[in-house]
Length: 263
Ligand SMILES: O=C(O)CCC(=O)C(=O)O
Ligand SMILES: [Fe+2]
Image (cartoon, rainbow, N blue to C red; front, side, top):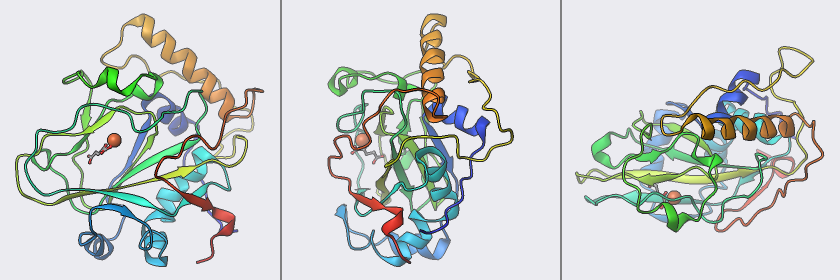
């Protein structure tokens, strides 16, 4: 099997549990970003399975290192993706989570947004709400929200990959120009039970460190976040019996285990 090294340490795993995303700025090489700018909108398969896309994006050491850290050794490598390409002004999407978000508290699915060009706010940057992956809801029930305190717009340099917990609330923000803005979305999945096999600085797992309140929550909801974070941490460390489903409704996203990939 290809040797993918984990890149996250305990503190960075705490941060992912709390925020539900990690942003890797400018990790993809400029010349490869340029090749992705001409991709058509919609469902992509052949290009996603090509050696250059695997080498430059999916198995880039920083991208796959995060997947390896949060999903274990034999995570699935995406074989399809969706190109969210916007070329004209629009009002922006309503806030939503994609498809059917998982119900439990494990981490089994990382949904990634790859931007082959720089994204400014005027381009219709994707917006996400940190910590919202902890709030499982009917997606129609959040569509009426406007701005939420603490939301962030993913305004980033070209070649950036944002890796998110599938349940995170997000939307394409309003676009006011005619600049092409592409976001190539793909997913990594877990196939094995969790253990603490990311970058370890001690043999004993530390206890979960809660990072405090998100902007939009009170103390009571923050306590819920802390408790849920503890459950996720203990599960990721392999300390609980709780069984999570590894192959939830995958909707349009497919992948094959890393152990079946040869470059
Ligand atoms: O293009 C974006 O920034 C987000 C698109 C999206 O979330 C969707 O269409 O489900
Ligand atoms: Fe979405």
